[in-house]
Length: 73
Image (cartoon, rainbow, N blue to C red; front, side, top):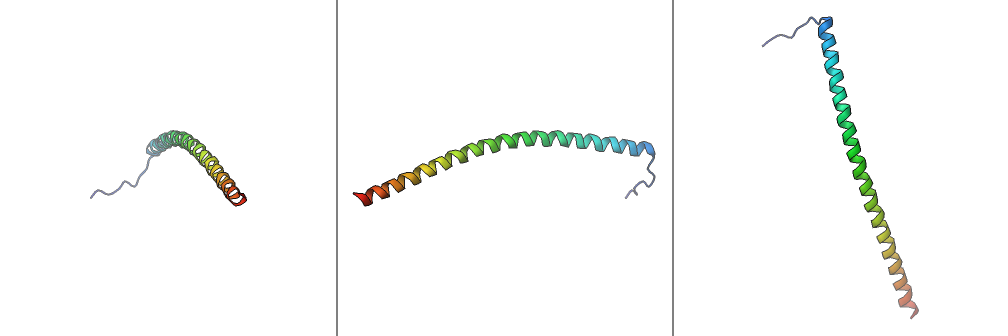
């Protein structure tokens, strides 16, 4: 088994720093794309829930009218 290096030169630390910066920049781009995708999906879900809400309200109104109509006549 190889033993890890114990000496870190300034050049190696600078290389590591650049590598970490590049990695975080790539992750930032991936998260931005994911966020945009999730935003569009949530907008479509909000539209579907809005339509479902309108349908449920219309159904409840129809049931109430039917109940009122059946007791009056």
